[in-house]
Length: 255
Length: 282
Image 1: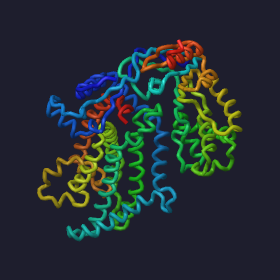
Image 2: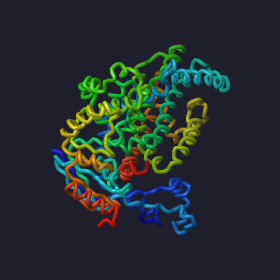
Image 3: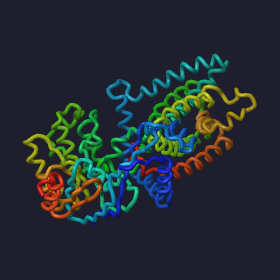
């Protein structure tokens, strides 16, 4: 069964100015023993605490909506859950096959044909070639692109590319799905069909963590919410309660 | 936000975090998992090579052609300058060039391995070593195309393969084993310090002239120490010997094996310590 557990997770980013990325400056710095600090602060590395002391335990069936300001740490948290960022401190334990759907176009190559891109994007999603060839007909059907799939996707319209990316990304449900800002699905006619598929797809996923500014989307897809602020989780629980807390945070005078 | 004035102490802090047995286990796990993702990086490497030559008539055989022209032109010129018999010098030069092409592609590509993948690294939960595997793999694909140049030259000048020629297989493997640690090590260093690729590019250029690729080791009086201490001479020689049908020499193999052991030791220390920072650096 899928599960996610974070204990006291802290992530801080060094923000390197170009000066500190240069070896020359580092050598000069070590030669002077770090005692000389010329003006301008070029030797200083600013550290941003993106996540502070996050504790989180998710089980199968959890659909979590992450809410909060820009820069509250939502994306960083998703990247920690995806094991892209290893935290500076704390413990992360994730059980289950995880797929981050941050950009459903990731790995698509404009010069390659639709079919080649199905393979490529599928590999990026962590599928094996065997799994991909088992699904290729179903994916091709769903996109309704027909013979276009034999053409390089640079000849596609944006909507067609979106259909293809969407169809591949939702072909095989993982255990844990991490979504940043929802999954777009192209034109209106396709939207109906896409939302059906998305529903089926997400129902088979054990745990979903969705970060979004769209309250409608979170109400649709999630059963719990987390409110983040300055890298901390400041509220969690039923969606409506968390939104209420969030609205108060946005407009303190409403209190 | 906090400002950290003592930059070096942050560095030491990271090192301490990284230098734990747990991190070494994760680094090895990362390399192992990277190998398991070979369908992904294998495809990416092929795409990268095809991409570069897409819609050109010759496709990737432009690699072969440009190498062929280079070998032919330099062979004629330096054969004259050094007063060499072309029957011997041409195959020597072709083999050297093709092998040097592999080594320099691995080193220079290695510097870029994580930098060029920055967009993917921040979006994909794959082991970081796949970008190193991909780099070595693309260098090997180009090497395969270049090898045709040597084969044509060898056929033309009547170099007959001997049983020793089979040594080229373990030799290539050993060069790749060495190349892999270089990719990981240089890739890591370059992700943090962006002038490393520039430094390495000029170092590789100097090494090309210091290493007997266009000149023969026998031209150097008394087998100078400059030659024996140059690890790249041994790297080139273990592959070039068998290609020219010569018996393998322990004096070349030994330094290359030492280089692999030392290189991997140092790389594993660094990769354990700093692998987890790469996603933050790129």
